[in-house]
Image (tube, rainbow, N blue to C red; front, side):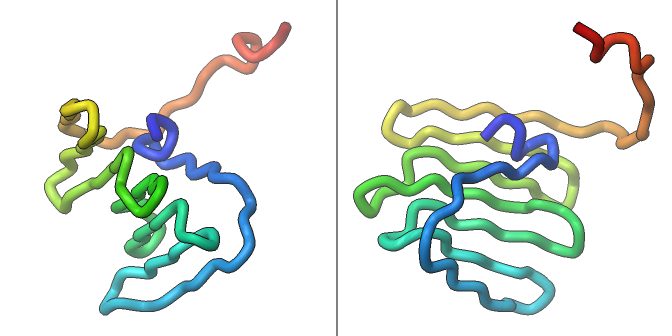
Amino acid sequence: MMWASLGRLAIPALPDTVVRIDGDVLRADVGRPVQWRVAIRGDTLVGLDHISRGKIVESFSRDASGVLTYEAPGARRRLRLTILREQPGSFDAAIFSL
């Protein structure tokens, strides 16, 4: 979920993905029964729910003002991050060497 908040969506491959368009948002339910619910606006991930036994166990959302919210409802946890600016940067390639 943390990577999703930073724009890297990596969920497991599951059977039966249902995709629909809701206005300017693409929504996808992944798995049977649904295990992941994804919402994408343009090229930005704006929502991700991890579902287990029909209940949301983790949730990520991003609003138009740049606030990222992670919630774990069953654990009563919430983390909010506010993006003040998005500025692409680069890293020295040497940091990725082993």
